[in-house]
Image (cartoon, rainbow, N blue to C red; front, top):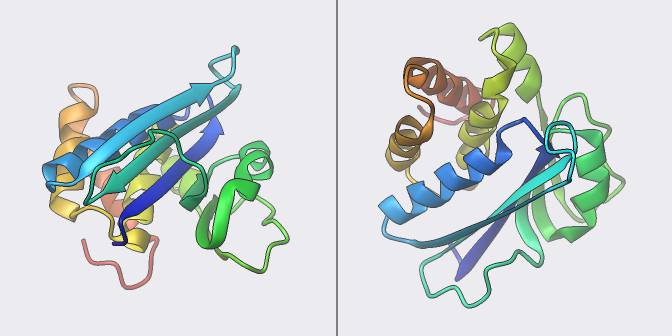
Length: 180
């Protein structure tokens, strides 16, 4: 990891992206890294634009907002269109496979069935955020899998731990070469 890794998780309100950001930041702290998480959502809350930003660093973090992200997750077309220009050259865009990819040839684009996996394999659309975390961590390797799992299990609602653990595993399976 370079000095600092910036991540933007974007979609619509109700998709659990703020919780996902909190989980990712907690996993980084468990790994002994510095981390800061911030969030923004439209006044509509559910259904409106939503984003969660996480900065992870081995050094001090002097500014808590993401300027140009290294990795961006987009779960909706609106979020992708709105935030894709904030992804730095050479960055990675992870999109749900229902999203039309942007016309940028200076980034890596990974299209995977995040929402479809939540709906079809787990029958729970609410775990798309945890599936996404499993996938983006396999792509970035930003936190240890053990710390991510621990953070998921400590932050999800009581009684949903097994479902969310399975969602994390399904997210990892979406990325070729990722080991659980």
